[in-house]
Length: 258
Image (cartoon, rainbow, N blue to C red; front, side, top):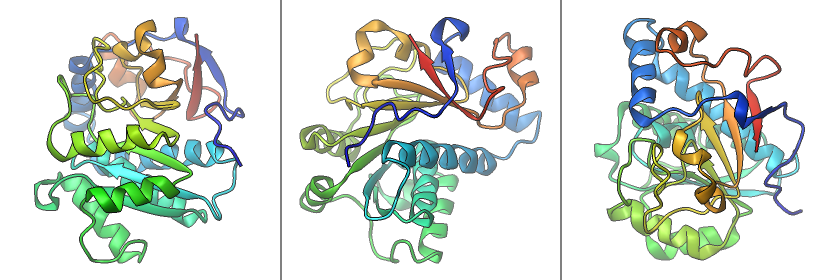
């Protein structure tokens, strides 16, 4: 069964109804949510992970069993969300293969916690999940869907090191890719495309649309655009002058139409 970039079944909003934010504005949102509202980053990670998994499952035709999903996870909060999505997809019958693109000891607390949960759950073994070129090429060749959870919205230049190598392999594989928040290699604020850069068939932005992804020039890299609610109170956005009221009135995942 083919993977669908726009699986349907989700409420829709026009892009004209929402305002894109810069990376700096998104950092302010997360700072206020954590420091002044006591919203735990692990809670936001779980919310993101479940939404990623729900959209991925829909793209797979609503059935996880006998479908292979490779989750390319970096060491930051975006990678943690990808690993949380891997756990949910495994619970729903998919065969998941998380790939850690980086040194585990250098990962964020949230990424290390999600790795621990995966290992304790028996979804992955206690061995090394760091990406190797030969192993990843094989995993990608067998994947029905690839999830890009490599680098977050703060990236301002091209991916480097292992993230760059993994990105190149994913692009070369031509497998369908669901990007989390921002496709790796795309500037969230300006839309500038670096080399290498992920070409996603679908991008699930988190909490607020990223301004750079709304630029016409990057449509070939972001694919269909969706937006997921992280559970951040509307008052956080309002105090920062960001208009989001009503976006999620019909559900926690919405499709954004041009």
